[in-house]
Image (tube, rainbow, N blue to C red):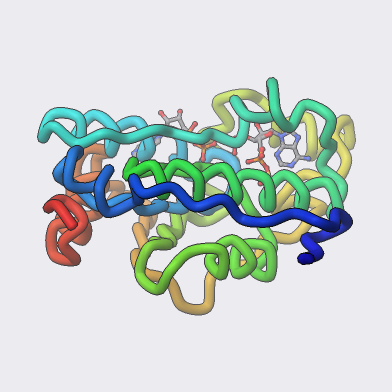
Length: 208
Ligand SMILES: Nc1ncnc2c1ncn2[C@@H]1O[C@H](COP(=O)(O)OS(=O)(=O)O)[C@@H](OP(=O)(O)O)[C@H]1O
Ligand SMILES: Nc1ncnc2c1ncn2[C@@H]1O[C@H](COP(=O)(O)OP(=O)(O)O)[C@@H](O)[C@H]1O
């Protein structure tokens, strides 16, 4: 008998077709690229550029974007701390399933709290969780404000907005930092190129 979370009598069912077999088929290694950063830091843009770049090399990717998943699976969750934690936990679990399918899964969400990101990291094997920090100062994100949300937050019309009146905890150590400082903002394709080089170096773009 085994207990899993709140359930009991749940046993793992194993299949003879495993992750490595799917990876052979796809000629790549399943992993999670976890893109974290403030709203407006360029997470979704990077995710798209990365998916395009990898697709062009014949690699199978799937983007889990915070905004998009909040339209469906996570539509019951708000932005209070415990709901963000649940949002991130579910994203981590779904990303893990994609990685197990052999897919290069690009999860792009603010994920502001370190402990939630660490929990998602712990779901995967060593090396399979690649954290990418969009290191863009709040002032730049705020000046971009493509959805007008910072303006609403500053006006007190949105409460608990990340970076304004809700914290963002930058990674203390992560696999890739993409810095965008004033005046020197690399293009999304260039930034994606840095992630693709990392994947190549670590062998993720070759079969298991
Ligand atoms: N209070 C508050 N704080 C931060 N962001 C807010 C908030 N309310 C709405 N939004 C919009 O929701 C997008 C962030 O969703 P995420 O799922 O990525 O957030 S989180 O990881 O659960 O913190 C985020 O999208 P991005 O701009 O793409 O980051 C915002 O557009
Ligand atoms: N590398 C970049 N250089 C300049 N502008 C960028 C870059 N990446 C994204 N942007 C712009 O910044 C804004 C926010 O990008 P977005 O990808 O929506 O951020 P996020 O998903 O983190 O909220 C958009 O207007 C986008 O065009």
